[in-house]
Image 1 (cartoon, rainbow, N blue to C red):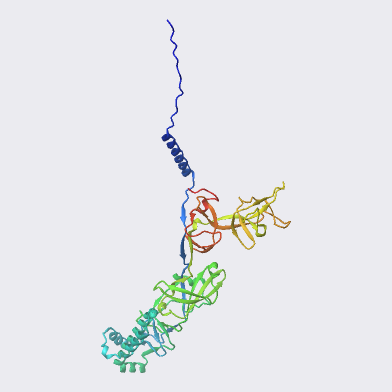
Image 2 (cartoon, one colour):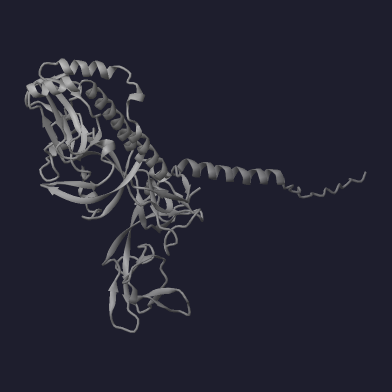
Length: 460
């Protein structure tokens, strides 16, 4: 029997490529890479630059200095006040009376507590004052309303006092002749104030460091006293509208003001504003700002220390957080070492080599002055010798350095230092100039943590 020969043909197994597995692998590698990058990268926050404004207003508790006279009692006795507190008095204005027996004072006190028939008073002066004020009033005169109210109150009380004295005219005449009743009149025009605090003799020339301590003020209410002894203070008269506010400042703030300069100040108590003339005074190692004014004194005549706010010109520009600001050191290269070479419109420098193969290098310029360009040490290593065009002069890179303030711009996904020109600054934010040649622009993206990145760091 014939042996059967079987022919066995071997086929190579065909390799089937699974596209899904490949795509999954690529995605897995991508995810692993980014997870690793995220876990190992710094926690960097990106901030978008916007416009903003900063007003550097400065607030102080200022010492008020006025021209003040204390009037004392010529005799002992019961006292009765005719003129309201914080009101204007002219020469011979009736301020108060002192009664050694107390009889007329009792009558005046009883009469003052009764409701006076307004028909018995001559209110023509009051009506005239109201008519004059109303006719001349404008919205710009709102701050004068307070002074007018005080003036009107004083005028009505004056009329009421005159009426009471007319009813007691005979008794007053008899007591005055007997020397038991004394009327005190203002000897000079001024503002009547019924309190003292021991600061009446302090001036802008003789004040001390201790005088600016509000806790040292002890106020004595004069109108609350029913009787006085001889020589005791009965009222105070502010004899001039000129007054001064004194505040201690630091040396840096003192350098911002010039003697004779005018500044606008605001009184937060009532939000009113006025202008004051500046004077800087130095006593030993301390600096004081003295503000001189000729208005607004009436409103604060009863206060020795006044809260004020000096309104500064506001600065507008690009507003960035202070945490974004950092510093970087640069090599400064003289401008006359730069030229346009190698058929390029870019400015560069010629780096010399000992082998003779000099190289034209185009470094990134980060800032410029009239004499120098600022370049990154990564572009021009320290010790590189530069050849000055059309000259035998050379310059050694790194021999001169300078530091710039700036931020890191990350518009392209990596950190690039940008110089900033600071206009104004607070504890949290800084206003920088816009439109500068080497700075940032509106809507740029910058690193919020400026000290945590370096040039060319990738920002994810």
